Image (tube, rainbow, N blue to C red; front, side, top):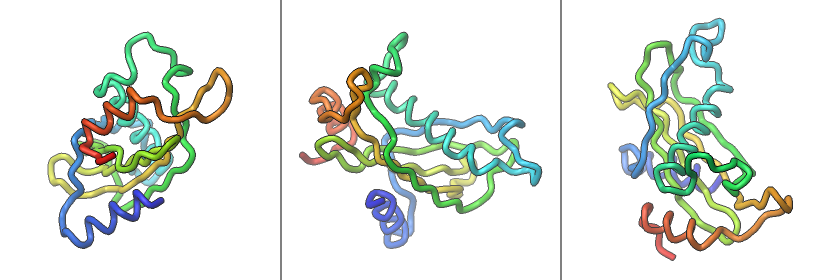
Length: 157
């Protein structure tokens, strides 16, 4: 929750958008729509999940053929603030990044926005816990992940 509050505070005081080092395009599909003609709120979770996986691929933390049991993260907390509806045909992107690294957990913030108008559509945050699925327990964030994320996000240690 702290990441989400920090993101919202940053936007209010800076009168601008958060700057992320990574963004991912989202294709709004007909099946994502609800009877009112806009994207169902549950799909927002799918959109940030899709962007999160691509972020991990981009950083080399998730590779082709790798088992999802070996990825080593689990979602502990999710917050989404819905700002505007997403409509079919809209060009949507998700900007995202790790904003805090703890011992076993990390915060990731997201900004869903219209890529043509730069209008904010939603803000979200998740708490990700480093997890050993084989032994069903949380673990310290691996040093290789910590080093890669710290360098990419320019997070001080």
